[in-house]
Length: 275
Image 1: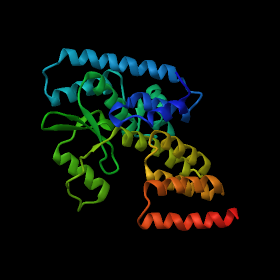
Image 2: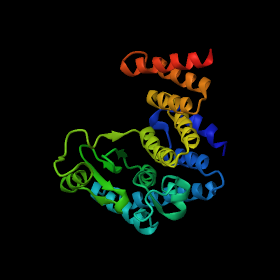
Image 3: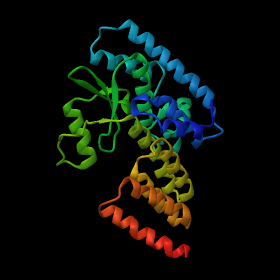
Image 4: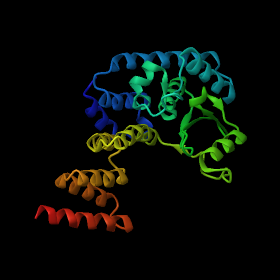
């Protein structure tokens, strides 16, 4: 397999529908943990895919709830994947290699495993950016089944979604349009990597956080806000030329508006530092 960052850069040029979510998350994990056994993780992903294919063949005409139950039996049951409730903030929970080793992870990391298996089975699925808790939806022609992969693939009814929302946003929160909108594959991967970046920044590792942001930009080079954040990180590190380049890339993508005006102010500050 090619160099991990070269692979990420190639992924950044793909249309979203062409991205292999398991492979992309594996490349991010290789960058994050270069000494980890990524080849074993790759073999494991292949084993998961083969098991999912066999499962799909055996239940070709089953409905969405049956498919959700089958994936739960495979991933949470046979392979033992579960949410890490004891050491939730451990950075390993967002690294796919470590997740495959430990069979524990954050909701979005487990979601990658579920989406990888569902795609292998030929079943339509997508991530759901529910407030503070990533979910996965299996899709039918006119309906979907939403599951909580952190809790063994529990099917989430409207009542359970409302209860989850209230735990996150308070007792006055109610379900509203847009909460179950599908996430693109890129957005799922960025959410996965954002967990690692946030933990590095919380630990005071600004340079490590910036490296993580740079990896995110490899797979999502058209995400303007990431360029702005990378510029701000470089500016804090007094890496003036790099900050300038990031801000200028942001302005190519977002030339007008309040945020663009703020970025121009920062560029003026950087120019004065270079003179």
